[in-house]
Image 1 (tube, chains in turn green, cyan):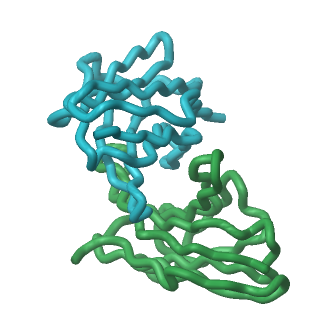
Image 2 (cartoon, rainbow over the protein chains, first blue to last red):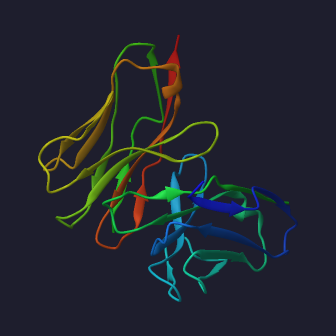
Amino acid sequence: NAGVTQTPKFRVLKTGQSMTLLCAQDMNHEYMYWYRQDPGMGLRLIHYSVGEGTTAKGEVPDGYNVSRLKKQNFLLGLESAAPSQTSVYFCASSYSAGIYGYTFGSGTRLTVV
Amino acid sequence: AQTVTQSQPEMSVQEAETVTLSCTYDTSESDYYLFWYKQPPSRQMILVIRQEAYKQQNATENRFSVNFQKAAKSFSLKISDSQLGDAAMYFCALETSGSRLTFGEGTQLTVNP
């Protein structure tokens, strides 16, 4: 099915370890986003991209890096994981601002111990 | 900066009854989009309804409708004939010219049989 695919779906990390979350979309969307969801705080934007080769910081970028080398992929990296990064991470993509809404992946539950 | 506030962390409704979820927002822009997303226990984010700020007519999608009050910066969601499958977390979201979604804290809706 067409949509946004996130891998992995679950992960447990030790403090200080690194990892990369992969987001792939097959809808030829220009815009891609990484959000984190924490209880009582809704979804907060970490980084986003408005096209291949571009990235920009969102509301909570510290501790994360991103890359968009190919239009269909958006990678989120944690270089040195901290317990405060325990969260559910969502990737989303959109064709154009607002009109069509956003398509979300199913999320990655990350626990840092 | 944009903000979205959902003042009702939890709501409950009897099956077949009507419930209204509240949302207020703040932005200095005149052109923007508003959304309601549903997140069931599966964690998937599902677009429920969207509203363009330049349209005075309130959006409607089957049993879901909004009351958009632009001057008051209010965007409430009404669910009519509530069904057990409507039980979920509901998020209000705002998109402005920056092509990024800002989410509220969420409202957990329980539907009682």
